[in-house]
Length: 282
Ligand code: PMP
Image (cartoon, rainbow, N blue to C red):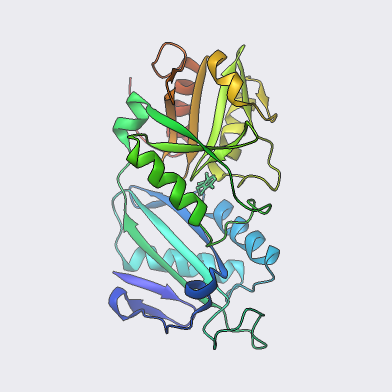
């Protein structure tokens, strides 16, 4: 496979970094993950726009302008002859310099982007998943898609060890988001989700769901809900680029609704599949 770097396209194994790389030593960088369905990028421009927003918010410059980057990513896709479901991973760091917390005086960002095969999570999408609750101990800038994922890693590991698919973060009982997803709750036919503040990453799929709701006439309420609301939820689901839309059928010991994927969740899944050009099941 080929990798795009800030300089050139390189074979996967030829991309290596010195020990003193700011992404490695400080997590001083940002990233994006874009879905590829049947060899085609899905919502690439939305992801690239967010990449530049994340970069600007940490005063990091992206090596290419948007048009050039989009073109190179298209080239990368062609070079790798992608035909399957996959993801594009892209990261930009503040570069390789002798270790020092403060910014280097020279502007030499590192960028790499590569494509990895990633099948759709069909079972989870159809059957739904279990989730656990965990304390949100993250910083105040969760809207930046930064490389600092240690709290997310620890939360996801806790979920795996407790046989759940996702860990849902709460701050003083208020649900913020998942360790790598946005979280939604249906009550009285309304869909609730945490507003897009600095406390969550405004997911690309989250924004898509907002559009689907508006087109389908489903009330979409960007109002935070709490742990106590879960007992009264008719449905819950999560969204992310790798997962798309996955029903949540249990949180800790609480069964959600009748323990099966809900009706609104199904409608949104169908809208998503249509938008992504995927075969819609009968
Ligand atoms: N929140 C967090 C913390 C995430 O890591 C992700 C996955 N990137 C999301 C939300 C969902 O965002 P998106 O829909 O853009 O994948």
